[in-house]
Image 1 (cartoon, rainbow, N blue to C red):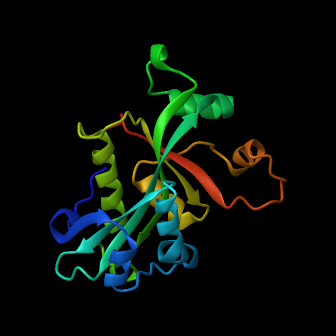
Image 2: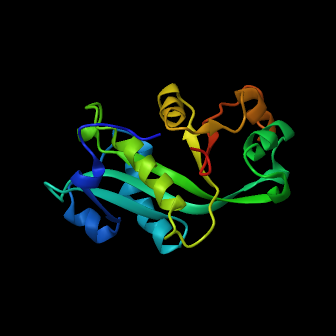
Length: 202
């Protein structure tokens, strides 16, 4: 899904790795979510140091001290043999029968945040970041095979609808199905929902 808007990131922002030096140079980043803000303030650099996740920043070209958005990525895989049959069918539907296997390469969106200063203005920065990632991992410049983009999305309507709007699908159709797979008690809160985007889809 390509988002048309009046604020294309391609001409209004420059992407670069998010380092401690860059964070010190830039204005403090906040997306009005305490968990995300805390992660980008300190944990992102620890993840990078331990090779557990790489964070990228989009800097506003008119004022490079402003960070428009941040995303943390990690290598991952979808392990078909460890998921329920109904979910397995859902994720393998677009894969040629002869190529179906036990594991499918994926990239994990560990965190995604958009500056509160640029939210709610029709700029669609979060959606544009997802569009960029879809193109990036489909590109001939990508050095490894990658079939899916996956995310453990916060289990709230705003977040789930955002990813659905951008072509992501729930692996498990219901919360009860996902809770059962995770072996959670029926009354235990389901904090996230696993979602995927098939990079082969149009």
